[in-house]
Length: 121
Image (cartoon, rainbow, N blue to C red; front, side):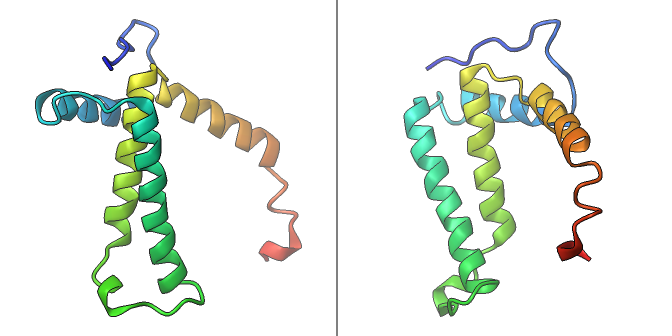
């Protein structure tokens, strides 16, 4: 499925957009084309599962198997990010603008809420 053109004058520029462009270049030159969105959604689920496995064993109560000790959390999180960026690219989502809007929402909604939360002290 071709990437929708998000490089319009109103596309929000920033570090997230740079990552989207880097992923798009890799997909077009090395990966040949994007997998369809449902395949990428399944891949995202798989990658999140790999992050969950590390978290449950390394930071949770499950014991870590010897075969899991070499797994790198950063590598797995990077895989999650890559697929998220692919999904944004192929659906025409301006992820930079969405990030900025989400942070504005969090700052407005949660600006003082967490500071007042006794559980976080």
